[in-house]
Length: 108
Length: 120
Image (cartoon, rainbow over all chains, first blue to last red; front, side, top):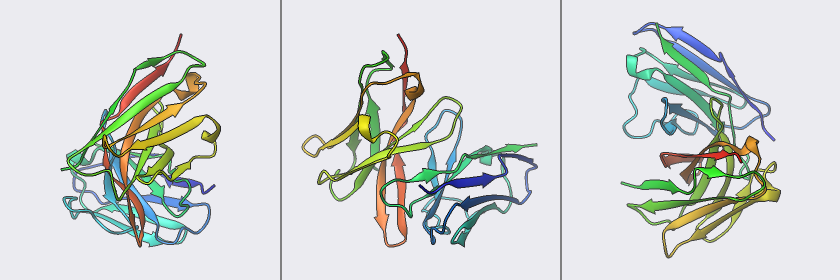
């Protein structure tokens, strides 16, 4: 199966900072990469799909990029409500999907 | 607005069967795949499996021998049965809608989650 590795596992940044989270796949997954945001006690929320597409309603400060094995999620100007855990997920392998271990983003 | 709601017991005894139902409202269960995902307390997300409204299923290999996912289109709901549970199956179980696109699949609507504890 395809392993997804995120880095860092956690980070702390100030409001207004630019934040980047990396997700690496154990093999090429083309552009089949999604990002989810999960706040405490809540279900995950789709943030980006197909590596770089924002669903309706997702703030434009979020962006995604990458192809093959290396992907990034960027928050251009961190806001207090962005404190959450972020997960990447590959959808390349249609029989079963895998998530990264998560990156916890905290506000200083 | 599509809404998903999990229902089922919050406590299951070891070696018994965990059963959950996901009720879909605000949209038809037809034309989509529907997934189950779980999250052990304090840990990350694990995709369990999915089912198409036609009945085609995909299961994660590690659970396939104990898992059954089914769909009831007349009730607009799908269900999960996990047999022979152990404490390792304790988790919040989420149901979600899976959207297929030419650029890959993603989970766009999620239920609120149902905590299931396996304990005697």
